[in-house]
Image 1 (cartoon, rainbow, N blue to C red):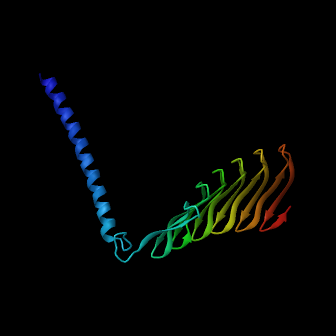
Image 2: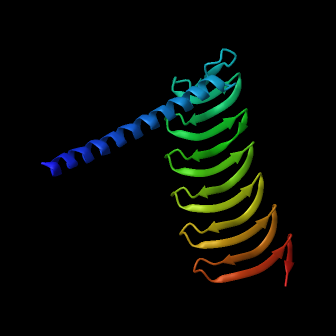
Amino acid sequence: MSLNLRLIKTKLTTDLIKIVGRVVVIMFIIMIITYFISSSPSSLNSSSNKISIDKEYFSNKTLKKSTSMLNGIKNGAEKEYYSNSSIKWHSNYKDGLKDGLQKWFNTKGILEWECNYKKNKKNGIENIYYSNGKLRRETIYKMGHKHGFERVYFKSGELQLEINYYNNMYHGVYAKYNKNGKLLLKNNYLNNKIVE
């Protein structure tokens, strides 16, 4: 009998710990939500902010473009569509400036280009694709400047060109290949100048 009683006590203790843990998590979430609602100066509930979505339409009344606005300035998602209603491009804005991932698609819905932006400048990896969806070029940017590698690929997927940049200048290896992967040209650069 005492073994059964110990098992019941252990089970009750375990269940109680789980319940208390859940209550603590829920209380923490409520505290965070309350903090952001009450202390955020740009709270969406503020009567001083005017949130809207501007829309443009084709002559056939299908949606051409939608833009999220805050107080008359682009803020949030902006999307443009082809006349067949497939997505043409998608951008994100913050305070009127491109901020976040931008994407362009062809009429078949295949991604053609994507790049991350920060304060209206390319910042991160820019990818350009062939119409078949394969990667054509990838370039790293840092606040609008090429900064890191840039790779260009043949339509078949093999590497064609590799360039390293530092603050928009050739800096490091510059290598060019043929479709069979054979190295055709290789130079090393330092601040846009070939070094031996």
